Length: 117
Image 1 (cartoon, one colour):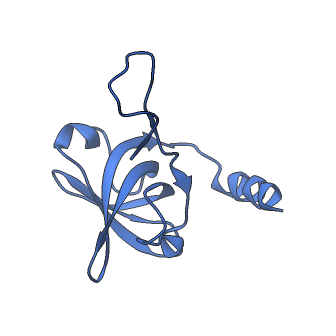
Image 2 (cartoon, rainbow, N blue to C red; image 1 turned 135 degrees about the horizontal axis):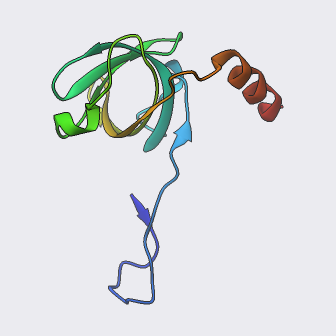
């Protein structure tokens, strides 16, 4: 989804909707278009990965194996993904994966809790 004028005028620009930070359990196919998920990789295949953020697990599908180069089980990652509604839930289409090796998740959660207040 993009914001902006789709009239083809070169002076106009198109922006992506922001990827909202969500826990897996908070994802709503009716409300969410783009999300940021942070968690542990618990499985990797050629063009998808399974992630667990402590509130749930989700499979994230990618267009090809190049997006998952260097990603392995047990790694902490942040994923930017599009949410596609399905009849019985949603599908997560990964846009990019950020390696968070060495990331202090405890400190991050404390800072997030302060910002939510």
